Amino acid sequence: MAELMNKDHNEGRPMQGLLSEAPARAILVSIETPEPAWPVNDSLDELEQLAVTAKVTCVDRIVQRLGTPNSATVLGSGKVEELAQLVQFHDCDAVIFDLELKPNQHRNLERKLEVQVLDRTALILIIFGQRARTREGRLQVELAQIDYNLPRLTRQWSHLSRQSGGGTNQRGEGEKQIEVDRRMLRRQRDQLLLELEQVRSQRQLHRERRKYAGAPVVALVGYTNAGKSTLLNRLAGAQTLSEDKLFATLDPTIRRARLQGGQELLLTDTVGFIQRLPTTLVAAFRATLEEVAEADLLVHVVDASHPNVQHQIAAVEEVLEEIGAVGLPMVLALNKIDRLPADMPLEFEGIAGTLPRVSVSALSGVGVEGLLSCISETLMAQFDALDVTIPYDRGDLVAQFHQFGKIDLEEYRESGTHLRGYMPTNHSGLFKVL
Image (cartoon, rainbow, N blue to C red; front, side, top):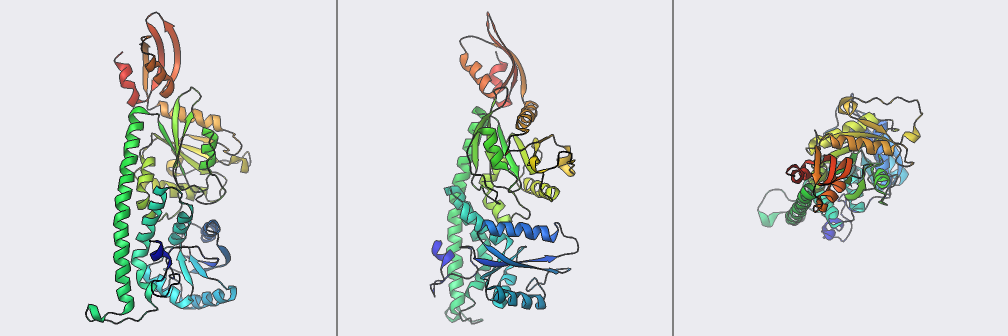
C-alpha cells in the first residue's frame, strides 16, 4: 500500500496527486456562489487552519465569483492562467481548493498548473493520515484514502503513452498500469473492509457488555476544535491530547467519571465534525461513529466564541443525522465562555434552540459542576425510580446501586438496606423483584 500511495512504479518518484505527504507551500482557492452556505472568507480561513494543521504554509488565496463552477476546471480560463502565474511567482508546490473536485477537474487542473492539486477532502484525509495512532484509526483512514483515490487513478499516468481502441495487447503503458493499480487498490480495499468489520463486531460486543453490565455512556460530540478533549479532561480528570488545532483528536477515547451523587458514567470522545465532512470518511469511520449513535446521552460541545457558531452547530446536526444519532437525548455545552463578554446573549436556531444548555469554560472549569448536574438530570429522565429494601446478604446489589444509580435516600432497617433513587433501565430488573 505504501508503495502504491507514494511511488510511481515506472519512474521511482512520488505519484503526483495521490495522498501521501502534505505539500510545503500552497495557494488556497475558492469560488463564491450567489447563496453560499458559509461566507467564503470564513470558509477559506477554516481551510487555512486545516492546511496549518497539516503543516502547509499558505502563501496566497484567490476567490472567483461564479454562478456555477466550470465543469472542466472549476475556475474560468482566465482565472486558471492567473493562478498558474501565482504558482510560479510564489514558487508553490501545490494548490488547495475549498471544495471537492471531480476527477476530471483534478486532472485538468494539474495539467494546466503543473503542481499538485488538492481539494478539501484530500487535505482532511492527509491530516487524518498524519494523526491516526491506533490500528483501527489507520485502517479507517486507509480505506477512506482508497475510496478517494480509485476514481482518480487515470490522471496519475498522463505522462505515459496511450493508445485508443484495440485489444489488450495494443493498450498503452499508462492504461495497463492503471488496471494493475486499480486491481491492487480493490484487493486492498476488500481486505480493509474485512478487518474493519472485525473491529466493528468487537466494538459491538463491547457496547453490548457495557449496556447490560456497565455505566451509562455519554458521548461528547461537536465541531472540530470546539474543546471536546479539554472538556473530557476536566470532567474525567484525564490527560488526553488537547491542542488548539483542527482534528487534534482522531482516535476514540473512553474515560470513567462520576456525577455529584456518586453515579458512574463513561465519557467517550471521538473525531470532531466539520462542514462538508467527506462521505468517504463518514463511511470509513462507521465503527467509531457508531459509538456516538448508541450512546445514552450526547453532549454537544459548542465553541460559543466562534463567529460562525450557528453554522458549526448546523454542520454537526447534519453529521448526526447521517450516522443515525438524531433523536438521542442531548445537552448543549456552550464552551469557551471565558472568551465572551459577560452580557453577550447566546441564542440558537433549530434543534439547538430547544435543548437544555449550560455555559462552561473547559479550560478554567467555570460551569463544569452545572454541566454535570444537567447531565445527571437528563440521564435521570431515562432511569427507573426505585424504592427497595435489600437484604444484608446482598451487599453486591447495594454496591451496584451505588456504582450505577443515583441514591436520594439510604437507611439501615432491620430487614436490610433501604434505598430510594434511580437506576438505568438495563440495571433495574434485579431490584424490581426484591
